[in-house]
Length: 325
Image (cartoon, rainbow, N blue to C red):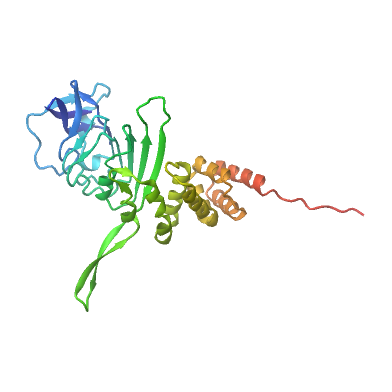
């Protein structure tokens, strides 16, 4: 990968990137300087003019085929990984990056330029490495996006020997609609979806898990079954900050919606989720039979075998007694 950059205040600022792959992993250092800032419009194809008098860095780890090299901007960008050194990203950095799906960064990133995610309608995953505490810029990023977002928090801590805690949270989509009350000649805004509510679950810049979990009853009334199932199993398998009260609520949903849970589990094929159902005793006969039918119809042999074994253990068939005269 080739990187256009400049040196400012004893640090490197990345201006543009060129390469052959859509996943862009930025370096921590360029020419001995830490990479602390990504310039405005760095990954946007809508940038007016290219910056003059820039320096060029070429990654020694990659071999470029010149005929395939292209500007990594706009639709050429699908995933970006910021190093731990990055503290600031510029205005409209991802403007109209319609194919951008994943963004990975650490809690070093604290300054976001205005309009950074304008036009990023397919961005759906944030991976956040919390190395210094529990604060991050996730709240600000979510505030710019209306679509459903999955946020993976990795609580790494300062001690390398500590086990990394991974937490996945689902933030549903939301949108606003202008509705006119014609007789009163009043125009008011109507909110749809619980996404806006879930985006308020931060105390300062720190995730408030208790507030997040308290909204589940509201989500049950408004969100689709697959979204609810994602929320349930994400929290049960990543229970950071999960109280006994809210754990019981999530378990009750899985237990009381056997068909929805079964279809979701088969489609995901996540063995950790199956294990969660088994360890917590959430399977019902109806749910298992529905899951078995679903797995058989979709030809998922491994899942089918697991489910058949689970049914045999939990609901063994009673043999009929035979009487001989």
